[in-house]
Length: 240
Image (cartoon, rainbow, N blue to C red; front, side, top):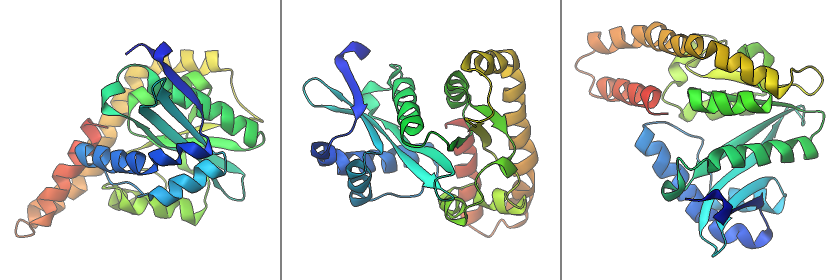
């Protein structure tokens, strides 16, 4: 699909008609990947649109293509670009990268002093974030707002997060600090130079963090939920 046929912009009130389509696709996409997500209602998406905190992608004929919204934490000190979703028909077209760029710009316009952050298990997302100026950081540099971390409860890897006292998990944390950051060219170069290292790190996390749960599931063969949960974790890691 030619991206020139796709319009990426801040959502307007009339775009609320896409709210249910967006939340349905968020849920079905998460199920296909075997992940847990903080579920959002169409009403929640509509509220974000009304607040001017969303970016939407549509075709010239009005077909919905993609979406992302802004969340704020710690009284606006931290901002996360959440709920990035692209319609299956338009995936692998580069539109996700374009949406991420526009929501990043919108976040900087609305919250110029805020730190932008994200958590991801995917190298592709890490690459996009790096091109915007995000840097890999430790979890201690993220918001400590309990509301944010409560959203992780629906993730299949939540037990790992708790076992690591919220200091580490399968995800890699990335941060853009407007007061102390490298240029996008530098973070992009750093990612490209260390891509193989990041890939090895993700695989190490998969081995190190999942091993205790594999052992527990093996010891608990009579628990039917155990193997199913483990399968879901593996599916999440390899299909993010």
